Length: 159
Image (cartoon, rainbow, N blue to C red):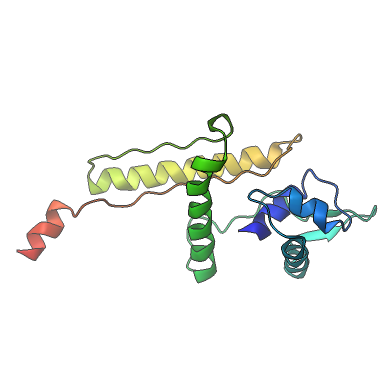
C-alpha cells in the first residue's frame, strides 16, 4: 500500500533523497527503509522519474488498473487498504475522512446498476485528481459492494 502512497506524495512534496522526510509524510508512518524501497520499485516500474532539477516526480497524473483486474497483487493491495480504512476510524479525525455504510435489499439488476454507478464515480474521481493543480495530500478512496445474504434464487437451487 505504501508504494502507491509514496507515488502520490511525490505530486506535491519535493523529494531528492531524504528518506526520513519522505517516510514522515506517509500515514500511517513508514520507515525510511520502506520509503527507499518504494522509490526503487516505482523507478523500476517507470511510475516515477527525476526531473531536470533532480526531484522525483510521477510519470503520469493517475494510474489505474481499470474496472477489470485479475491480479493477486491488486487483491492484496485492496485488502491492505481496507485494513487502513478500518484503522482510520480510530486514528484519523472524522473531519479528515468520510466513511459511510449502507445495507440494502436489492435485485440482481439493481446490483449491476450500483456497480456501474461506482465505476462512473471512480472514473470521475480519477479525472478530478488529474485536473487538480493544487494537491497537498495523498488520499485513499475505497468502494466495496458485497452480498450479505443468499438470494432467493440461491435458496431455491438448494432445495
